[in-house]
Image (cartoon, rainbow, N blue to C red; front, side, top):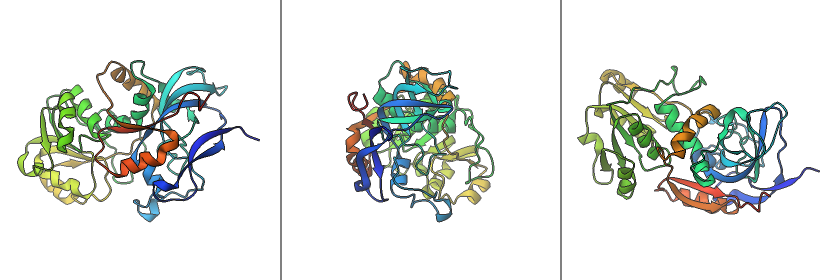
Length: 343
């Protein structure tokens, strides 16, 4: 009989109430993998998309899934064991990762648990200057921002467009980030500032103090101003909200500018973009241990800071999802695993 651990599992798809904290089989290391004793788990939108059975995707894109499923992708923790063919990590190392994404979309990531196995290629040493909560909050959101703005770092085809996503130069450029107070948005503004851009942040007023602290040059409260009616001459708009409404930003861009919707489904402004001479491009974030290793010093020395909205014990994942569903988060939600739980 396999060893057991505590995990959060789905036995049906639906609302937060389907998240059940219970015993589950402890995973076993396979070749190329590392077993992690989890200390913290980052909560991300794909977690609730999975919980709902991906009902937001077109039917032909919905992956086949077999219940029960452990959701979640982002972890920080301690290496418990390594496969015989893994040499880059050792037991006792503090590490962080976005686990098997998007390859684990159908439930193969399994991060809401005391233990998780991770391909060594998707793992990096945890930044020394931050704790496990901050490290677990970073991977998906920060890799998304990095792969949109700095380097895609992979050649996985994107079903929403025929061409590979290519980041644009940022030094001295005017960049607007919509949804700047959210999990990805607040990291987009920091990366753009780090690369020397003039950054305009659009968010609700409650996020203004945080975003000014991150160094944004201009701030607009979307409740008070229709930004697309007052801002022009931009080089790049990154819409962290995305979807059909992204097209409203096309008129804010210079000819030769670019619009990057983080969530590209539903965008219908391609004809207008062509007429205006604007590039529209999106990408799908992919797990990448090498990029997490490259990012780690920026997190460690405070160049990039991950805002924490709230923390919940792993056993209260349902409450965390209810909190997320209420909206207007400032930064990330993180689930914590007490040292005694995974001892």
